[in-house]
Length: 125
Image (cartoon, rainbow, N blue to C red; front, top):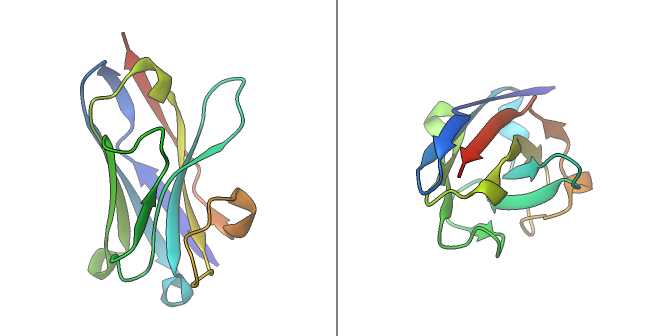
């Protein structure tokens, strides 16, 4: 089993920044790709960003490209999502997820085996 715990969410004004963290514990040696998803009220969950195990390969959704950056520190078993120039459309619960997929960075939630409990991000306009 793998446990994922997100932190760093909160209330921020439009144009501001937040950094989310996702700490992984358990059988982390078998993890490869890590991803961030979000779900806004009344909307479907959407992929935000993903990163492979080495950190050399990342993929960011078009909706946040240029504003969000994903990174990881394997020594700390932690993945980060740096979010800049936030706007009201970024308001959502953000989830960290872990996948065994190695050949690509999946954007489908079904390709991720483990999920965190989520952290709320609210952007006030």
